View 1 (spheres, rainbow, N blue to C red):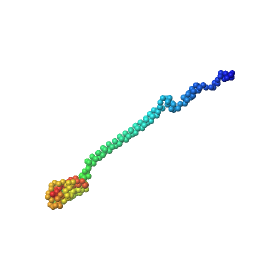
View 2 (cartoon, helix red, strand yellow):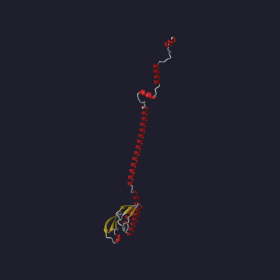
View 3 (cartoon, one colour):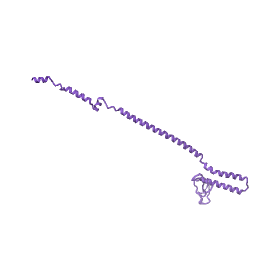
View 4 (cartoon, one colour):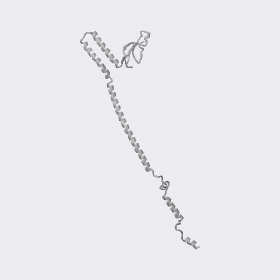
Amino acid sequence: MENKDILDENPSTDTVQPDNLAADVTSAESDELTTDEAVTVNGGEPDETGSESIVQGAVVDSGSREIAELKDKYLRLYADFENFRRRTAKEKLDLIGNANEGLLQALIPVVDDFERAMQSIDNTNDVSALKEGVSLIYNKLFKTLEAKGLKPMTAKGERFNADLHESVTQFPAPSDDLKGKVIDEIEKGYYLNDKVIRFAKVIVGA
């Protein structure tokens, strides 16, 4: 009995009370919180707004640079197109203004021949020579015009065609085979290459 009383009176100093043990465990665990626990303790979701703001800012900067580059390309393209349009309009006006230059240059020698022929009229009484000179000038003029694409239209004896002929009047046809055909030509028609530039004025057999 005495020994037991001695043991009870001198408890070991290394013995830890249950309440103190639980407190120590809780303290240790609180020093090593997991990520989820830390979020719970902080009262919400993890703070990622900083990184998201950086990413969004980078995207905005990239988009702004791209828009600026596209705008610059558009302005340059628009300026080039305006210059091209003005240059083309000027060239078109010059072309229209000088369209007959080649023809007029080709006709100048014919005009020179006519002037010489008119001077010869006052100095000669040879009618046959004058006729021959006028005939030569006419042939030269006609060949010059043919070289530029002018072609006379053959209408007499052809069936009347409203796309080529202009009927002035109708006369009774001399024969049945001339009915509906051109029996006489009052004014000759002309083509420029394959385009009609003057309709032939004709008389049609009825």
